[in-house]
Image (cartoon, rainbow, N blue to C red; front, side, top):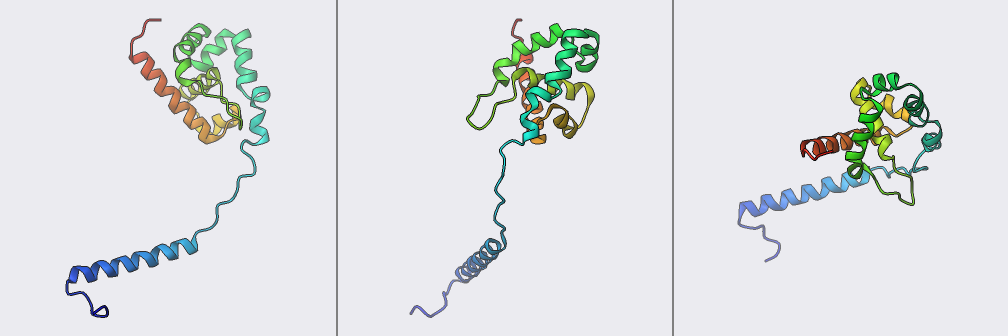
Length: 157
């Protein structure tokens, strides 16, 4: 008959556990808040990084007018910066999408070298380069990985 409990004690335990799991999932689903919709993909402040960010202003000025400070800022001179950029550019260049412009390869390298040279926090770098904090973190990690991969492969210059 259908109303009789199963003879197997494990079947009863399994049925009880299954019922408890269903109830827990239902409660969790009821308590879940709907996700807030993002209003902007990239904020207005960050969208102006190509005109007002540290890379567009300070880094370019150091590069053109003050090689000694460029060396202090990055711990690399212009020539070493250019050589390293040329070697890792293919690995760190990202595609342009319809949603936003990618961070350029030279800017990715500049952010990474500044992080390595200064030990600044990602939040501070993000603000000065006008990038999101998670973007800054991803840029630094990806670029470091590319530098290690390319330099470890001992490819000739």
